[in-house]
Image 1 (cartoon, rainbow, N blue to C red):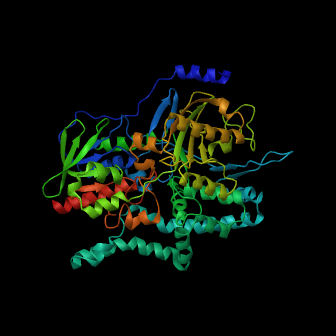
Image 2 (cartoon, one colour):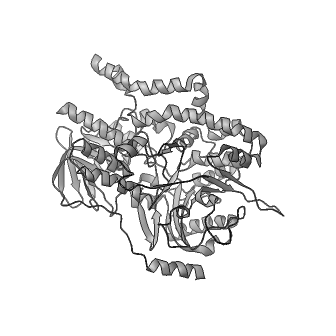
Image 3 (spheres, rainbow, N blue to C red):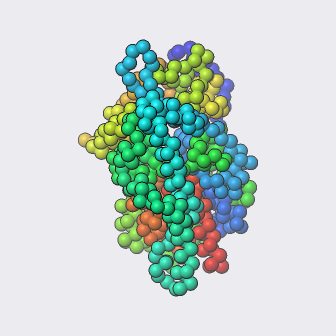
Amino acid sequence: MPTRSLQCMKQIQRLSLRTYSKTSGELKLKYDAVIVGGGHNGLVAAAYLQKSGVNCVVLERRQVIGGAAVTEEIIPGFKFSRASYLLSLLRPQIYKDLELKRHGLKIYFRDPHSFTPLLEDVSGRPPRSLLLGADMAENQRQIAQFSEKDAKAYPKYEEFMNRLVDAIDPLLDVPPADAAAIVQGSLMRRLKSLKTLRPLVKAGITLGSQFPKYYEVLTAPISKILDEWFESEPLKCTLATDAVIGAMCSPSTPGSGYVLLHHVMGELEGKKGSWGYVEGGMGMVSNAIAKSAKESGAEIYTEKTVEQILVDADGKAIGVVLQDGTEIHSRLVLSNATPHHTFLRMTPKERLPEDFIRKISQFDAKSPVTKINVAVDRLPNFLSRPNTPDGKPLPHHRCSIHLNSENMQLLNEAHEDASKGRPSERPMIELCIPSSLDPTLAPPGCHVISIFSQYTPYTLSQGRTWNEEERNKYADNVFDWIEKYAPGFKASVIGRDVLTPPDLERIFGLSGGNIFHGSMSLDQLYFARPIPGFANYRTPIESLYLCGSGAHPGGGVMGASGRNAALVALQDLKLSA
């Protein structure tokens, strides 16, 4: 073992394991509301309900709360954000209402935020790289390495995209417009439902006469949009990665533009477009939300697996049954599980309309993602930006580091591999080093690295399965590619945790391994998330609500689905009182 690895292991021995779990007193058999799943959306729902006087319990299957927003010590002494790994989309209203800063949420802001090193056959100089951040003048200088034309166009592109963000952002905090109610029911119901159109109308006004251009952004392949703006491939490919990350699509797939938008509409502590690392890892987001909920009186239990949702003879949800047979009754049930798991596993199928079951079964949850968590004894040393002799983090180490992003065709080819049932030969790699800003995650001199890679199909071709051999074969290939950009990387590795789509499904309950609970394609957004007619968090079962990322507005550590579902449930509870 290298000397630096030995030094790290000595530090590890002095660190104790820490478990990020929450348990509250003794589980009762009756509550006002049961929340199935202790992911961040379920915790947000519990916090809002409890603050409104609705007595809540959160039941989490795993030994730790947070769903995919967790911190775990897979390798002793190294704290990993094991699934989700960056914060940006968390809704400002939730941050404020739940007083998350007071409850311990601390954010390390990243600037610059994007680093794309290139593999170039050059002599006499390092390979080029593209570093982007908040300083527009510096961004233009960086882009000018590849194209003066693109450097001039970039501020206009940012302004264009920010206007679309301003239009769509308010739609995230309210249920989708109820199209059916507008044309059906009593006059009073129709008039009330017309109010749900206001955010849509406001969005249209914001976009104004350029609405057709923005419509194209949402519906066209992102490659077409970026080709219209820019000519340099490293810039286009860097931007395109945000359009395909987490999605089984390529830059050439129609509708890939929305996923790009979904990743640029964030805000942290009033700083629009900011992304940051959470001190202590993403589990600290979930812990802060849980503390807020518990302060108001909510109860949270881990290792409580919900086997079935109880439905009475009148078709109303009246509680849940745990795996051990315990029945917990309630007036409301909110499911933070995926649509597939909620309706195809936990809800009695005889209580659901056949057409509903069919449409839920067709809800696309394909995932291209394999997440690799790595402990290393030193920082990666990139050929394009060599480390300093002291080995301390440089600005580019704090970024999302995009590898195999020299041109968009590489992403298309990587996607094509997966569409044929085989892992990408040259995978798209997004590499983050949160310990470059947060010293609490690893022993001194060591680091944790989060690798978000694609494309890896859920089902492999030729009858192969994701066994240990296939898992390691893919991870080794990813490491080989990193080694090309940062020689010495493989020698720095202390340990790794490889999570393929089936692993993400098994461990975190993510159907298909999809980090968004279901694809963020246009046919599964807004009015149609999870399916048309049930986009307002209500379900065919009275008093059963969907509060996870499979509901509007979708995935990411946002909390909007949980808050919106809680407010809808509260409204229904008041009407039934």
